[in-house]
Amino acid sequence: MVRNDGGYVVSQADEENGGVGSMYPGAGMSMGELLRTWRRRALLTQEQLAERAGLNVRTVRRLENDGLLRPRTTSVLLLAKALDLDGAERAALNAVARDRPADHAAHRPAGHAADARPWTVPRQLPADVAVPGIREREAAFVASRTTQAVVFVTGMAGTGKTVLAVHAAHRLAPHFPDGQLFVDLHGHAQATAPVDPGDALARVLRTLGVPAEHIPWHLDDRAALYRSVLADRRLLIVLDDAADEHQLHPLLPATPGCRVIVTSRHRLTCPGDARVLSLDTLPLTEAVALFARTAGCALDATSGGDPAVTSACAPETPPDVLAEIVRRCGLLPLAIRLAAARLQAHPSWNARHLLDRLTTDRLAELAAGHQSVTGALNRSYERLPPDQQRAYRLLGAAPHSSFTLGTAAVLLNTTPARASRLLDHLVHAHLLQEPAPGRYRLHDLVHAHASTLRPPHGARPAVRVRCRTASLT
Ligand SMILES: Nc1ncnc2c1ncn2[C@@H]1O[C@H](COP(=O)(O)OP(=O)(O)OP(=O)(O)O)[C@@H](O)[C@H]1O
Ligand SMILES: [Mg+2]
Image (tube, rainbow, N blue to C red):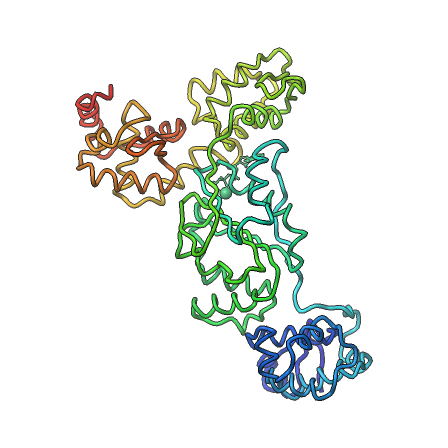
């Protein structure tokens, strides 16, 4: 009548009809697992199933937790009806309800584990590479059990958003028994377009045990199914490198049992009461510690937090050289790691030599393997619409990295109102900082990057003239 097929039971009638029409998970499952699987397939919460079956919700919960060893036959019949089970499914449910594992096991292929589950609990977090002592306060905030269900980590390229999110997620993982999902949305990936939200949902749904043929086509239906599947699970979800709200919102669960950590270079809006953490560059002491740790140097334990450093790789290195190196890196974690990697890759260099090189052409220096500061900033720049790209290039052609709105308007050759709108977009993309209302600043490395881009055709001389007009030189 039934046989197991890779963890699913196929009825003979279905098999004759092509086999996939009404596959259902079954072999080796307990009563509770079967009920949970079929209830989720029917998109019902425990309360809804109880109501539909005319049972007490506590009974449904106990059955799903395998807390009732010999359930009443009438309860099983009512549940089968409420779940709209077909003949083979009812037979399987009756078999486990009557505690006849032998009948059930007869349908398992040889070697199939008796405790086979309908899905593997996902444990998708990448390795935790956070260096101890760096961003500890921020990690404590993101990993706090009392923080809101959605924490949104934002900041410029390379500030350590992903490293922080993954580190905090590892800390939180034990509190989420239904697993941890890590979804790279490729908002700013190299040579890869941002992930389509429908594709992301389909992948996540498959991971959560929904058979491919049960995944609807429409984005809204996928999002609704996703929310239903998550409704009574406790999952931790990291949505990394979100491109925009259109991509992000369908992936946000609606129930409090799940925690979400979102990272993005953009200041996106989240529905509900998401907490936002804006990651800035590192404080000097942490920046020196990160460099020292990753370049293979040891921090002087007696320095009491000063950037006083004894270097294991070059003991004669004065602390001020290390401090100057990380300043040349703009205190940006990505740049610091790349500078450290350069030093490590060249045993004949010392820290002073690295500093000289960073003084000559730091953007060229801040590259190692497939990573570079220029590449990371290019990916932010390339995602801008043409008018913002133009504004970014013009700002890069100015000699100073700090300016007022009035100066920017002169520089961009436009009205203050339009300049303000353009600058807002650059602030939103974390390519520009606004330390005070009407005052703007380009991060050192961003200014260096923008200045390497050719200003709009023939604009460089005009920019110089406009800079003089605005007393920028
Ligand atoms: N807490 C940390 N401990 C150790 N290294 C770190 C830390 N934070 C950042 N880094 C280093 O900086 C690099 C960039 O960090 P990360 O990829 O998290 O930045 P990001 O803000 O997510 O960048 P993007 O905007 O490109 O996604 C990492 O590869 C890592 O080498
Ligand atoms: Mg990232």
